[in-house]
Image (cartoon, rainbow, N blue to C red; front, side, top):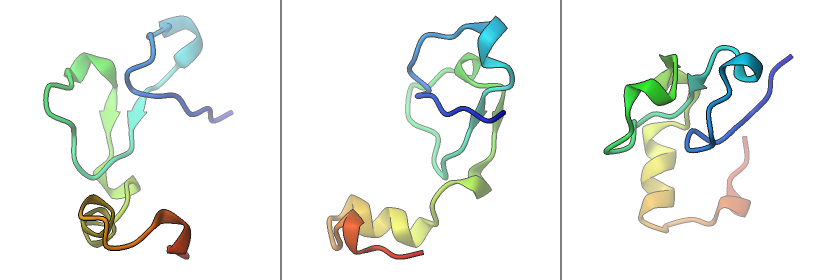
Length: 64
């Protein structure tokens, strides 16, 4: 079973299982103890992040 959870949520090692950080850019100040694996390729593309970051497009206009 796959469950999603915020990386800043409290950690429950018994229930959480393997914690994967799925984002292109790891946030500043985010300790490596908050996740077990970082898989940048599972996160949004750099181009999409750029569009969202600089508000050039709304999230609802993005199609996959």
